[in-house]
Amino acid sequence: MSKHIAIDLGASNGRVLVGDLSQFEVVHRFITKNDQILGEFYWDIQSLFAEIKVGLKKAFAKYGDEISSIGIDTWGVDYVLTDDKGGLVSLCYHYRDSRTDGLIEEVSEKLGGKLRLYSRTGIAFQPFNTLYQLTAMKRDRPVAMAAASHYLSVPDLLAYWMTGVMKNERSHASTTQLYDPKSRNWAWDIIEEMGFNRNLFGEIVDSGTIVGKLTPALLYEVGASDKVVVIASAAHDTASAVAAVPAASGQTPLYISSGTWSLLGVELEEPLLDEKSMNTGFTNEVAASGGIRFLKNIMGMWIQQECVRYWESEGQEISWKDLDAETLECADYQGYIDPADSRFLKPNTFDNLMTKRIDQWCEEHGFAKPASKGEYMVAIYRGLAKAYAQAIADLEQLIGKKFSALHIIGGGCKNEILDQWTAEETGLDVYAGPVEATALGNLVVQAWATGDLKSLQEGRDRIRIEQKVKIFKS
Image (cartoon, rainbow, N blue to C red; front, top):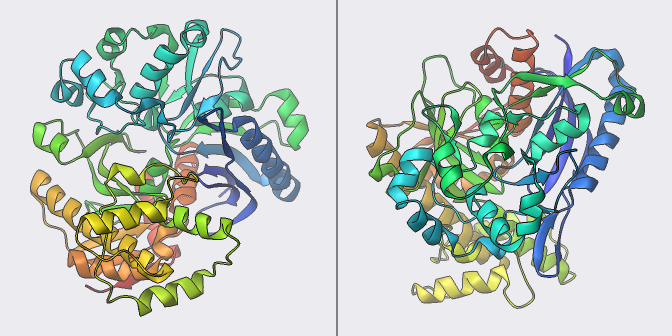
C-alpha cells in the first residue's frame, strides 16, 4: 500500500500526516491562526497555506516517491470568494464572527419560513452557516461580493492553490445550507431568492475525486514527485472522521466525533427533512460514502478550551493531569451547563469571559457558581453528557431504532472522565477511539480513490482491527 498525506485542519490546530491505515506519522503541527481586526474575526488563511507547505516539504524529504496522493480536510461552513483570476476579494471570515447575529430569523422569513428552508437543504439553523455568512457579506461588503466570480470552501481553496484547479467538494458543500441533498446539487432556488450570483457556485465533486497534480512551482518548492495527485478527500473534517468509525459491515453505528465540537449521529441512506427532525436540531450532511450523516452539532471541548485559554492568559500553568484529578475530586458538585446555550459560542473577550458565562448560567438555574477549576470542568462535562443523552433519545425516536453502544472518535475521546460520565448518563457502553479518526478517514478516502482499498468499508474493517479502542461500561 502506498503512503498518503493527510492535511487535517481543526479549529485550533493543524497537522500534516503521512502514512497508511496501519501506521502514520505526524510530520508537522501548527496553530490554525486567527485574529480579530477592527472588530471582525478572520482566519489567517495565507499562514495556514505556508504551514501546509512546511509540512509537505518534511513529508517528501522523508518519504519521497512512496507518497502517491494528498488530501485536505477542514472544519465546515467557512469559505472565500475569488475574482475571475482566482485572487481573493476579501479576507477569510471565521465562523465565530458576530456579523451573522440575528440573521436566522431574517433569512428564514425571506425564504418562506424555517420548514421550507429545512425541507430544501436539511441543515440545522446555526448562525455560522454559510448561507448567513454570505447574506452578511452581501449586506456589509457589497463591492467585494459584486467583484466575486467563484465560491470556494477553505479546503477547496487550499486544493486550488496546490493544483490551479477549482472544484467544490460535496461533503463540505453540504454544510452550507445552500445544497439540496435530494438532487445532490446546489439549491438553486435558495441561491436565486437570496440574490446570490449563481455563477459563483461551481461543479460539485464526490469525496475521492482526483482534483489534479501539484503546480510546477509547488512541485519544485516541496520536492514532490510529479506523479502525486491532490484528492478531494472527505473535505469536511467530520465526514472524514465518520469514515473512520470502526463499525462492521451492515451496522448503523451511533457516533460522536468529539473535538472542539461534538457531532452526534448516524449514517442514513436518505435525508430526513421533516419538521420533527428540524425541531430537534438534527442536520443532514453528506458522508464520504455519498450517504447522509444525520447528526446534531453540540458545543464540545470549545467551552473547556476557552476556560483553559483564559487561565493560561492570566499566567497560570495548566497541567491536564492535575486538572483531571481536580475534576474527579469535585465530582459531587451539582452544577452543570447546557452547551447548546448560544452564550457559549463566542470566544473570550476581556469583558465577556467563558468562565463568567458559566457562572451566570449556573446562577440562573439555581446552582452555586463553580468555585474551582475542577468544578468548572464538572459543569462542562456533566452538561455535555446530559446533552448527548437527550440527543440520543431524540435520534432514537426519529429513526425508530434503539442503540446499545456509542462510538466516541477523535481527540475528545481521550477525555476519559467525559467518556465514563457519558456511558453512565446515556446507559450505553462507550467505545472510545480511534483518537486520530479524522486523519484516518482522510487516508481511507485517498486509499479508496487510488485503488489501495476496494471500498470504504474495507478501510473501516482495517481500522477496527489495527487501531486502539477503549471500552467504558454504562
